[in-house]
Length: 222
Image (cartoon, rainbow, N blue to C red; front, side):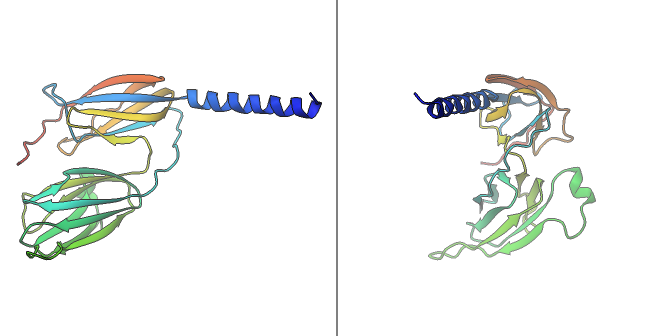
């Protein structure tokens, strides 16, 4: 075997070792979020922040839809990357308004031009429902409402990190490709009064964590 061939084989071996080492530095984190009474908490937004300060690759914008149906926003909580397009569709037979403003304390200090608002005509039998798209560029949670029907509310969490996910009906959130090592876990929920303190975690190849909260979820209409 020539010296040239030996060099190539050695380089290939080093490259393979580097790839394997890189893969070994990322883990999977399964987080169970519970409410104040210890029950699983659906629709909680879970964010993981590596202690190293790593930001990860910015998630690509996506296209998603939120319907106004039976006087509700469906889904009630959405998580989208910054720059995503959200299409709002009115499936009810009467007009609806859509107002999106920063949720929580941020909404109290937001200026008059913050967020967005639009109006959608009620659906007419035999015709396609009215719909409009908005592009969400500002990270953070948005609260959705309808000026015409005050009981309607929904939420969109606009994320600028790849390590974010919404809990399922069992209160479980699973995140992959999280850098191994020390990290903080933050939880945001529409019904929380104030955001709780971050929870520390040591991310390994496979890690599990339970995060209790003081959230008392509202009872949703069916």
